[in-house]
Picture 1: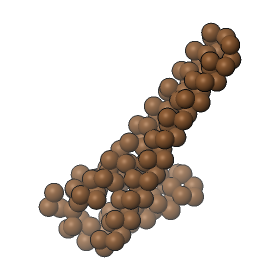
Picture 2 (picture 1 turned 180 degrees about the vertical axis):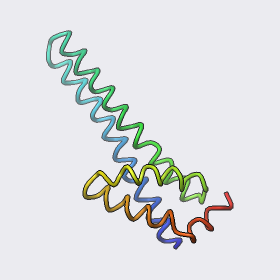
Picture 3 (picture 1 turned 135 degrees about the vertical axis):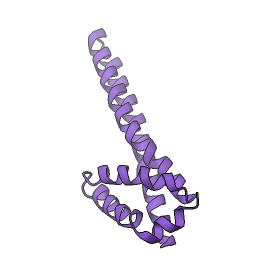
Picture 4 (picture 1 turned 180 degrees about the horizontal axis):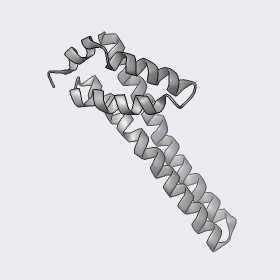
Length: 119
């Protein structure tokens, strides 16, 4: 079960890191598009969309990354964080669905509960 825990932790960290990078690129892309529009209103609207959209992506991705770090350290709280993010990942077909389902299977296993209960 320890290998499964490591795979879940690293997979969620990778998906969380990709989400954080995506959030930054989303913010930058819309900000540059707003500046390139040449209009004040267009720049404000596009910049606002970039900041709000990027923040939304980051709010989801950061707990996934931190939960993966916590699971590697065998912290019990990380199981709960990753259960929530894994359930939400099920909607991200196909990679999120695969990782989310696998993560939920590993995280709800009794052996995983015993391995993380000491922290």
